[in-house]
Length: 227
Image: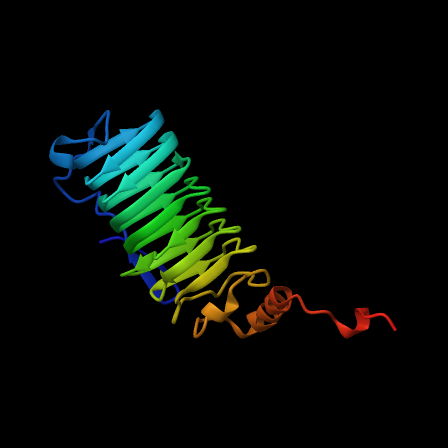
């Protein structure tokens, strides 16, 4: 069983190379009875993609491009998304397990009440997104991603790791982050620091957090005051 491990956090990857598993090319992600299994969906350019009360399992989605995307009550099990551009993504009330998002553009995405369990985001663009009540039920890794001006609202990222990511003006607005591993990032422009109690950082990052706190509090330095 393949895994991706960074420091103490390990994600179990989709099982797509098991003996006897053959992925069939499909022309749609809308299957009979709402279920698509053992599939490869590639190179589609869609105006709209709406999936509701569906189940994707054991498959690959490659180079999918959409202008508007809405997933609701979508179950994803053992699926790899690579090179996808899901514009205006709204993803609600869903569960994602053993999934990989690699080199994907999810800019401005809105995720609400989505549960992640063993999910890897690698080299993805997630700028300007809003994750509301995003829950890491199992290990979750964000690696080499851009999360600029992304907001986590009432999220539970206790089982998550963020490594080598762009966190400029990334904000946490309430939630649970105890044990979240933030090592390997520049934290100097984080926002919502009061929510990040008991996260894991390197000692050298203490100065970065001090810089972020000073910016968040909009303090005035004495040497800049007029005489």
